[in-house]
Each structure stands twice: as structure tokens, then as C-alpha cells.
Amino acid sequence: MQSLEFYLDALSQDDLIYFFLPIFVLSLVAEYWFDRKNRLGLFEIKDTKASLWMMLMVGVVDVLPKLAAIVAFYMLHEISPLADVIQRQWWAWVLLFFLDDITYYFFHRSNHEVRLFWAGHVSHHSAIKMNFATALRQGVTERIHKYLFWLPLPLLGFDPLMIFTMMSLNLFYQFWLHTELISRLPNLLEYFFNTPSHHRVHHASNIRYLDCNHAGVLIIWDRLFGTFSEQSEDEEPIYGLTTNITSYAPLDVALHEYHAILVDVKRASRWRDKLGYLIRAPGWSHDGPDKRAKTLRSQIL
Image (tube, rainbow, N blue to C red; front, side):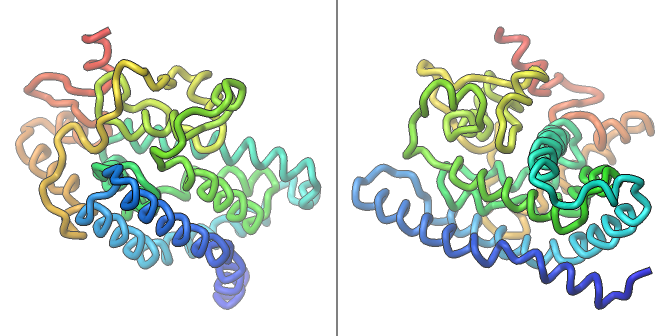
């Protein structure tokens, strides 16, 4: 068993954020300047402040889950029969890219289809504007369950630093998707890759767009698994939640859905219904109309 110092040193090696953060900040400042100069209305000050608060809170909350993940990844990698086969070869990085990306797809999709997970992710979608600040508005408490989805990868022989590096690169790619300044890319890129157009759909509260386009880098996963939706020229995305929150206080933004779950659980009398409010998709009710995304979409289509 490795010492705690070993794992802390491994955690310190995952330092790509120090390269990415200046790019994020400069891009955000440039987008804000361009927005003000051209009066595009892409920013709302309170909304942007809430996004920056979420970024700071994630930096604090993520420390312990990430450390626990590194410990788990190292332990699983040690017992992997493929640990001697996967040695950071070029083909291993290519394979890891696809495995990481499809893992992200199912993690992200689960965040939208399991209400307890949605409670940790919803703060990212509560932004009412689409800009680079929204990209920094990550789900705070989703960090608690996030790394569980990546546990199979060290068993397949990929070392922890490889996995964390690929996870960071995937999130870095997603940053530029959060903008309205880029309309559409050439059709070939739109078909295979996640783009700002596809991600605007993901952030929209329109019924036809709800719970679609969960991809990280490759949009092909959504096309394969039936969660893809094209941005329609006839229907502009309306950002935010189907019922927007009214508070911009950081704790309210980060935790409001947990309170809503607690209210629903107390309201249900049967344990099966109480459990349903935790594991079923947002919008499910034991005694009211079914407002889950798939149900609402089937009604209008």
C-alpha cells in the first residue's frame, strides 16, 4: 500500500488546470468585452457572478473526492492484468480517448436521468445565459459521484495520471462549446464532434431539446444512443431550467434541488415512491403529472 505522501504527490502532478485557467479567464474577458462593445446581451451580471462562485466552490469541494479517486485508481491499476500492457503508447492514448469520452457521455447522461445526480449537476444548467462563464459554472456536489464512472479504466490497465490527463483534456475541449458567438461549423464536423450548436441544445429548456446532446467531444454517442437533437432554425434555445430559480446566492444555486427532493420524499408515503424521487428522472411524480423530458417530448412530437 502506497503512503499518503505518494498519493498527494500524484494529485499535484495533475496540473493541467494551471495551463488552462489563464486561457479560460482571457477568453471570458474577451467575450465579455466583445459583448459589451456590440451590445449583444450575452451576459447578465448576477448570473455571471453565480457562475464564478460555482467555479470557486468546485475547486474546494473537489479536493477530497479527487484524492479518493486517485487512491482507488492506483489500487485498481495495481491489480489490473493489463497494467504491463498499457504503457502510454500512442495507441493506448487513442484508445483511452474513446473510452474516456464514452464514459463521460454516460456520466453526463446519468446526471440528467437520475434525480439525485441531477441535484449535483443542476447548478450548471441554472445559468440563464450561454457564455464562457457558464462553462466555469460546474456542478459542485456532482464531484462526489463523478469518479465512480471512471473506475473501470484503471482495471483496463490505464494508469491514474493518464486517466486524469484525458479527463482534463475532455473538459478543456468543452469550454469553447459554451458560446453563442459561433453559429455552425462545416457539416462534417457537426456530424462527428460536439459543437457550440449542439451544446446550445443541451443547455436549452425547450421541451424538444430537453436532456439531449450529452457528449463531451464526440457527438456520435448521442447519435448512437438516441439522445441527439439538432438545433432548429425555427426554435431558438431558451437557456436555464424549466422552472428557473430566483436566488443567485451561491449556496442556493448549488443546493436548491436537494431541498426540492427532500420536500418530495417527505410528501410520499410509500418507500417505493420515496426511492423514486431519488433514482427516477427529474419531473417524475408519484401523484401528479409526469413531467420527465421524454414524456413531455413524446406529447409534442
